[in-house]
Image 1 (tube, rainbow, N blue to C red):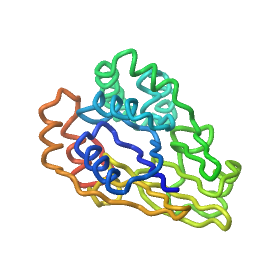
Image 2 (tube, rainbow, N blue to C red):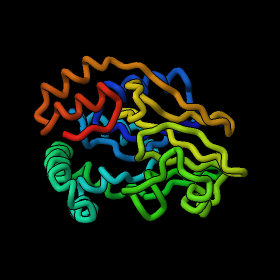
Image 3 (cartoon, helix red, strand yellow):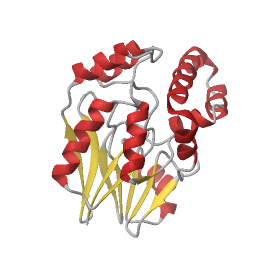
Amino acid sequence: MRCAIISDIHGNITAFEAVVADLKQMAPDMVFHGGDLADGGADPVAIIDHIRDAGWRGVLGNTDEMLFRPASLTTFAAGLPGLASLFDKIAEMAGWTADQLGGDRLAWLSGLPEIERTEALALLHASPGNLWSAPRPDAEDATLRATYGGLDRPTIVYGHIHLPFVRSLGDVMLCNGGSVGQPHDGDPRASYLLIDDGRPLIRRVDYDLDREIARLRDSKLPYADWVVRMISHARPELP
């Protein structure tokens, strides 16, 4: 059994198409998505439509939720008053993305579960009960077990942090496939997770970064130059 998990696409159609081409070569039996599909990029509609048409199962991400429930961003931002200007810009970008998607696609996003399970796998966007916070790869084993141990599956996969890793916690394999559209580990290539008969592997895929930058600059996405810097440097940055 071979499955792929793609996560944190963030509207980057060029990276997404490169990963889809790689998936055709890898030929997984199943493809899952880990949320954060549309917001923060030039092409949210094409990505949502492809995933819906393909019938890929997946989970809700925090930036998916804020598109149909803006109060979720407001609530999270209230706990970080020093970053109010940042969250105002994020809200403006989310408003643009939601307008592009329209009611039917937003309704589809709102129906995504927070956790997806198979017999051998549990998939979620961030942490159980929390779409907005997740441990980093260097977290203590005890923290990771406390966060994810209750999911009761031999392999647990999450997204959100845009940092790919595979880590053994005794009888549990904890994985993060990184980000298709906005990696944060200094490597601008798209990243996703492939699990082949229980063996996880991080896949990195080259894509035409210049093409995506041109799409961003031609779009009406607010603060597109901010996204250009992030995908170029493959690091989180302030606008």
